Every structure is written in C-alpha cells, then in structure tokens.
Length: 505
Image (cartoon, rainbow, N blue to C red):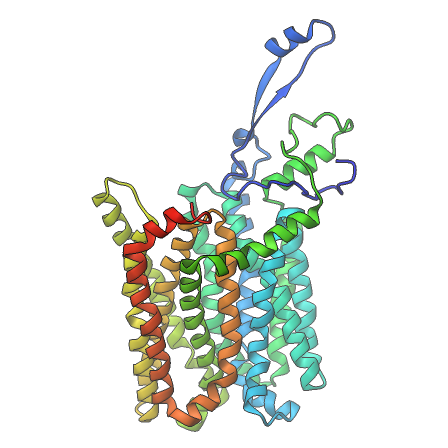
C-alpha cells in the first residue's frame, strides 16, 4: 500500500459494480494480555459492509436522489451538445466558408468519434480513482472545449474542439450507470435508472429545437455558450454536493487514512486482494471490449444492429436542415422543431416499449418455471425491429413526394419508437449474457458511436444519387436484413452458443 496514492485503486481484482457493496470481511481485535487463541475466539467480529452507514447504499434517500439528479444533469448536457448545432449546420458552413457537404457533416459527427473512444478510458479510470473526480473533470474539460468551439477562428480548430468536447463529454455516460448501481440494490434501481436516463433521452431531441432558434436569432456561436452555461451550472451544484459512490475506492481511502498501515481505521478493512500496477489493470479493461466484439458473434451482431440504427439516427440529424429548408422552406428556428418527431417516438417507446418488453419477459419466464433466460429478451427486440424499416420507408417516400410536412415527421417518430424499443432489449441481453457486462455495453457503445460518426459523411451524396425515397429504402433494407433474421436465430440458438462460450455467464 505504501506506493499507492490515497484514493487510488490498484487491485488486481475489482468487484463488479453489483457486488462491490456486498463484500463481508472479518476483523480480528484483541485486548492487552491473554493468549492469541483467546483473542481469536472471543474478540473476532464479523465486519458487515452491508450495514455500515459509510456504504452508499445506506445513505439517506435524500442524499441518494440528489446524487442521481446531479449525475442526470451531467449526462443531459453532453447528448444535448451532440445535436444542438444540427439545425445551424448551414450557418456553420457560411461562417467558416465550407463548401463541401462532407466537411459540413463532419463538424457535427466528429463529436461521436471521441464519444466512442472516451468510455474505454473513463470507465476504467472511475474504478481506479472513483466516480466523482472522473465526472467533475469530464464536465470541466467539456465546458472548456465547448468554449473553444464558440471562439474557433477556422474550420480546423472548430473540428478539433468538437472532437475534444466529445472525449470529455463521454465521462458521465460512462460512469452514470455505475453510480446508480453503487447507490441502489437491484430491486430498487428502476426509478433511479429512469431519472438517470432522462438526460440521454431528451438531450438529443430538444437540442436541435433550442439550437435552431438560437442560431437564427443571435448566431451559431451562442449555441455553444448555452452549453457552456449549463455545464457551469452543473459544476457549481456538483462540486459541493456530489460524493464518491464506488465502494472499493471508499474502503481503500478509509484504509489509507489509518495511522498504522498494518491496521484498518474505524473498523473499515482494506480490500482483500493482491495489489498490482494500476496500468496493468487499466490495460485489462481497455482490451476487453475488443475481445468481446471479435470473439463473440452474438455480441458483434447485436452491437452492429444497434450501431446501424444509431448511424441512421445521426444521418437524419445531418440531413434534416437541407430537407426542411429546401423542400418545405422552413427557417432555421422552425426547422429545429422538426426534431420533435424523433423525441416523441423516444418518449412513447420509454412508456410503452419498456412495458411490452417486461411483459413478454415475465410471460416467458413464467412458462419456464419462473426462471428467466437472456433469450427471453429477444421477442421484444423482434417486435421493435419491425418499426424501424416502417419508419424509414414512411419518412423517405413522403419526403420524396413532398407531401405535407407532418408526414415525414410522423415517419421519424415511428423510427424513433423502433430505435428505442430495440435498444432496451439489446442492452439487457448483453448484460444478462456476458460475465463482463460493462465491457459488453462499452463495446456496443463504441461501435454505435463510430457508425454515428460515419453515416452523416456520405448521407448527402447518397440522397443526391438515390433521392430521399431510394436512400431511406436502402437503409430500411439493411435494417430488415440485420434486424429480423439474426434476432430470430439468437432466440433459438442463443442458449447453445452461450453454453459453449467462455465469455458468457
């Protein structure tokens, strides 16, 4: 322990989030005098972390909910920033003299490249240094880099600052789910996870609504000043109120405060694990998502389907301004309102899709003697996957025919419903299936952010060649090929595949 900085976890084994709060330790104490045998028999006492008030799961409810609310605020800002500039893309092109539509789309989607990379570093760092400082520093750097976006003098500097903002902004996305797990037991997490999920859910939907009117009225740079202001408010509230929630780091810090390094302080023992170089631990975590993607076809195909939908989602963000300004002659501000269709689909999926998923799973588990299996998540995935191509066909051909502006917006709402309805069972299947659930989710998040970056780069060229109807039909065909037969195959063959895999539970 002498070479470990206070608050740094460099254990070769770090408990999973779900069990990090449930470890029990035995502490041996003794009085002066008496034999060692007497001390061992009469003064042994069981140390129960579950009932220690220092354990975050034993915090008062008010403290827990304040923490979750602040983390949700941190998590709201970054998805907001990813899409808030979408309606103002033409203004960005004019400001920096950009004539290539691919470069214009790059100014939006470059954020997602670093957003894909960031979780691979932020999540392991949160298990070495704790959640709180990763959240604080991520938010502060995010603030600085968005200020750089507002003040950028040219295209190159703007793209660089957007990249760095995405890197810093991935921190709350990486740590937020862990904070929920740290604070609440499995049967208590539903409401907390719902509150945490509000940010990522509404951020991308309301960002363009705000951005359109701001860019039109006071200029595109003020879009980033708004993001800076929200990040500043989050920092002002977060620094005095957020406390560390990751149990292994809390116990290690308490142990490091002991005056005698051979003893623990106030009955709080150190982690019972060998200590190794923290860089080895980080490397182990960094390479695990790549192992899951390359060695598990189930993880890859589900992650790829999620990434395909996410890429289409951001392709819509990049092409909406051109469609609604050219075909429907909307102003920049009014054009931002068109993103509400996707937001409505997200909210409907949250209220309805999650309930359908739970009912299907419960029904199948009851037929299996009350025992659930990961494959019981798949029927809900198949149900949601039908809405994705329907929404794309509706959106593309109504835009191609220049029908009433509400028709393509309805199509985007159907697509948004399908997207969120499929995301939930995919993530639940990955968590249920793989021993290292966090790494499986990180692998899926990385792949989807990469496609979210790539799709807008070729969108304008594809729609110019095929039209909105043909282009969206192509995307709908991919969604059908990937999103329907493979989940059906996983439903029937998944259990056998899991039994043969060393990566699965």
